[in-house]
Length: 342
Ligand code: PBG
Image 1 (tube, rainbow, N blue to C red):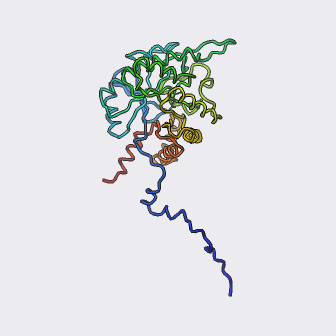
Image 2 (cartoon, helix red, strand yellow):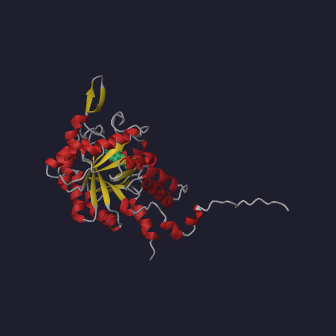
Image 3 (cartoon, protein in one colour):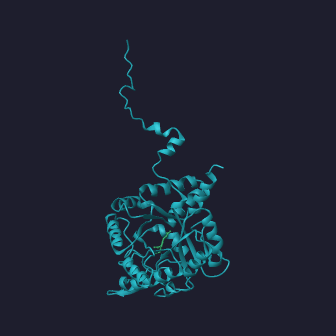
């Protein structure tokens, strides 16, 4: 008698493939669900009339004049997208970003127009000076001893508070400071409370990295720094522990929820922030460069666009994000609708 080895003998009783066979079972055991209701769509607004100026490096997105917003936001709300985040391109720039705080500034006008159009959309305003300063930095700059020109942290705080109040006054639902200025959350909270907007929440870009993935955005927002870079205020991509300190500080200053940005190369940061602060709603920003990279590959036929996009967004949620700012929000909504059974 020949002995044939029994390869099944003693096989563990657990077979993980059992749960993967039936598509409905796969759905039942799915841990992470991506929904259009988790997404926030960035919008770029500019002065003028009847102009949608396409942004070449962010395909499918344009700088829109305010008169085009009603149609645009009705479509966004109809697609089921719950929120937009606004970026403004002002009429002119100067050293201190004066136009950022005006009641009839571009973002302020846009917020009022959106709010007059629909109540079905949450309006978040990005709060930063880089679109409004002629040097393109996220605050007022000063020549420090030794000829080093850099953002003057504390001189910037009051401007951010003023800008926040003018956004709140125009009807913004959430203020999202993105300048990585130390103390910005406390200053903005104080300004908002003093002006009677103690109910307006702050979504702080708490851990924002000095990332090359912002390239396309800077073209869209016309905010390329005219000299130097942002490494003296945005975080070093090499640091993870520091993100936890940034987040803890912003929460102590009164941030209601927080953001990690970018998302895709920072999934570990998202995961750690969520673990450190499980009760704090966490937003991740799937930035312009991440989107552009995928669009370019899809246009070449190298990647399946909808599958890749959904995989990336799902992975950001799996890492711990509760919501995602993404240029793909409309795409996701359309794919979802196309898939829905009749
Ligand atoms: C403004 C701001 C930036 C982004 C969001 N808010 C640009 C920057 O810091 O240079 C980037 C968004 C993106 O790349 O999609 N400070």
